[in-house]
Length: 165
Image (cartoon, rainbow, N blue to C red; front, side):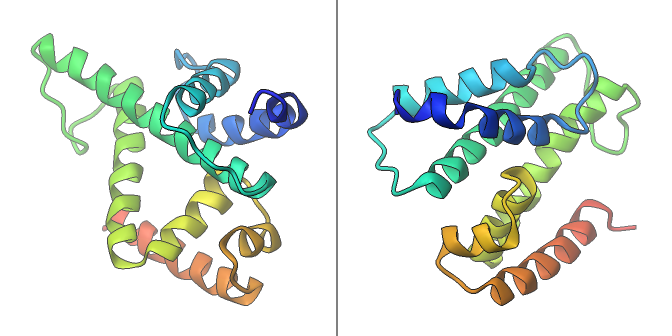
């Protein structure tokens, strides 16, 4: 892991920037902090076998998303302890809305994974990991045509989940 990180650090920066796009401008986690937090979770947890470059990027992307979800939950919990009760439809504050968006996407992806785990993995790799259709196909050991179909179906399903009106 220590040998691999310097070789793909720029790619991890790209993945982290994709995760942070759409977040509020003053987000406490910036690109470098997100990479480092994900790295600490990778090396600090249970021993993980990484098959190849794409598997590593996929794993790092998933951990980055989880770091952002945990961060959003903690921020909202702190706000609630201060007496603030927040729902997605009531959120007016941009910072609160940003945290709720992260949680809504995470919950929608979890529901999608229950329906079709492969489609959820395609979304993680394409949207959060920034992988191409071909690289996603290689990482998941499926055809590019299947990735295209799953990507289209998953985006449509997620759009309906996140924006029902």
